[in-house]
Image (cartoon, rainbow, N blue to C red; front, top):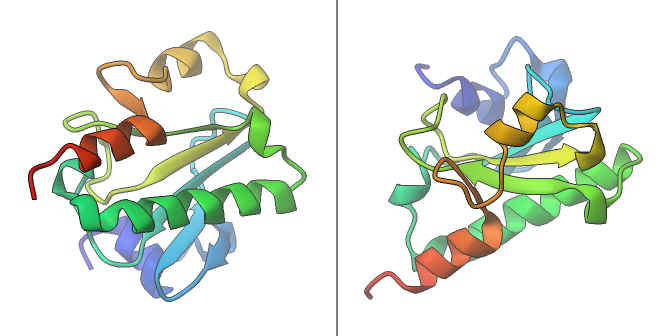
Length: 139
């Protein structure tokens, strides 16, 4: 399997201990380079290369990734209101499998992490911005 996130989704990853939640539709796991105390990634089980490959019909998928990730943050003792949630916009994606970052607490982000995960920058966008983008796509 060529995609490391597909390995997490299929259960074939050697890092299976970092998986926090797994269903048939998605997987939530710990980032290998955490930007804060809890840095989770939520990705669909189906391989989608990046946000530009999403359509309006994927809005529910994006919302389910966020809800699953925030639920996992809460189970780990975090607070959804203090969680930075967003995604890297292509071409600023290191792994070519669509995923959402959930980082808690925001207050522990270093200055570099604040730059890398800066909301609505050219390289990192919030989920509401993504949903607005998807809603504005032609039918």
